[in-house]
Length: 394
Image (tube, rainbow, N blue to C red):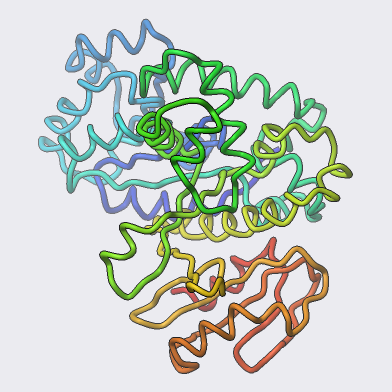
């Protein structure tokens, strides 16, 4: 079964503009399947095999001459020397769509792109299945199932797969390959405990000192390990919104795991029933909504223009999308019906910035249909928040 991805249109557009396009993102989100579907007639080589990666790294010029263009190079980060030679090949023939690259380690990838392929390579960040993609493919959507199992394509293409076995294998592969390659982590058991601590903090403000104390590591180590999770597409950090750019840089961010299924697994929940009654369900719902918004912008090839807003009095709006001094505001509520009490943060935002500067306000809830709460604020189905963003976010 093929699940159509929203990234397809953007990938095609980038390949018509740039000589090379890099599709990057976590393992198992469907990068290889996407590029092979969009470019079925392209030559293909994977550097996932050490022997092939060694050839590309030690004899890059000879390696590239073995293939015709367009050429898909999978897991290109395993041959960093290849980027310089790709630059030479591109400069000989600057035709768009020559090379389609994929990779899952953003540190090494972006270093190679910035040093050798600047101006020659479009970059498309990819995450796993959004709720909209899944509903459009299956013609149905089980919200609780999606929240608990997550959005990795293989869990839906092969529904017979036991999701707990799958996540166990995923974490083992991630720890052994990506973590060891990106950063020298001496004790993988400590890093595994670190991942579980991160999952329990999804949807919350990040304190490096508290995190480090709970794991028994130094705060600087916690910061390095957080950067590993960011580089490998496992977490997103949102900065607080202030008019002053300086304040944005010094205040603590909020942390979100990119997949709710992985978060639930790391937190140790065995079924949705236990999770749905747990205090963490609200944070998991917020994580779910935030990631639908992030996926919306990623699929368009855009930088994610997201912030959160909080006052010293504790009034908060979960998401702000800034548009030239105006905002789309989103508040996440794990409820089927929301009332005026849910508007406290949104009303405080409107009071602070003026109603004229609020493009739209949304309460992303578990309602099945949108309904108006005020002239500016609408309750909407949180799983499909990207559908209203497609109208308003530009």
